[in-house]
Amino acid sequence: SNVTNQDNIPVMKSPFPLIYICGILLISGCATLKKTPFKTLDYLYEISGKKTIAGQHNKEPNAIPDKWTREINRITGKFPGLWSGDFLFQEENINNRTVMINEAKKQWENGAVINLMWHACNPAFDEPCAWDSVGVMSHLSDEQWAELITDGTPLNISWKNRMDKIAVYLQDLEDSGVEVLFRPLHEMNQGAFWYTIVEKTALGICSPPRPSSAHLPAAKGSRTDRTDGWR
Image 1 (cartoon, rainbow, N blue to C red):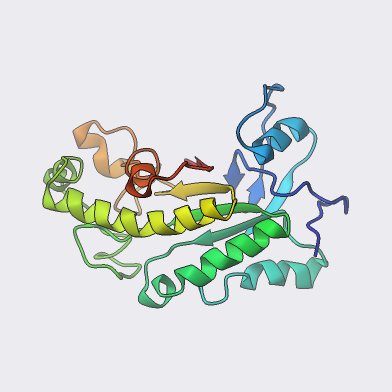
Image 2: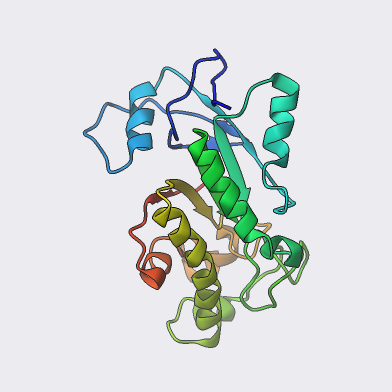
């Protein structure tokens, strides 16, 4: 099915989001710029200040990665212009990451913007993990944060190893020609997750460890056909 906007006008294949808040893509008033390496980003500049693109995040389960997108279609008769998925952290969802990535490819072919996020397990604890105090909602001490960002330490190596697992999927998407809005370590401006900015003020760290900006591209030789989304 073709992706349509609220006026039932077909959306250009894979428009690329700039700001994604609560399932709605808000296009800021950007000036027309020269062509970018991303055709979808070019399209967003074209529609800037004129249109919005509605989207839907597909949370668990990764075994059914279009569940909530299909629910929107059932209710409205239309498909969202943005499809969102999550690498997640529970065993059953980690085991179905390939299913989720294949859905991302399908949604791209159908014309959707592709957004991926990563609720990551704390590298000081085990993976898989849960939504609890030794999982995604755990904390690191100042000493652990210092270790995490020091190259070659056990925590640093543990974190890089987990990023390497994610890099394989991103490389697969790139090889398939899929552009991605990637939001690792999202919502870092609050205190719920181990990687959020509140956790790092004592060290003077003003942003979370950026796996997509540094280690992930180098890990698998990725050309990085994606934009990192920080919210």
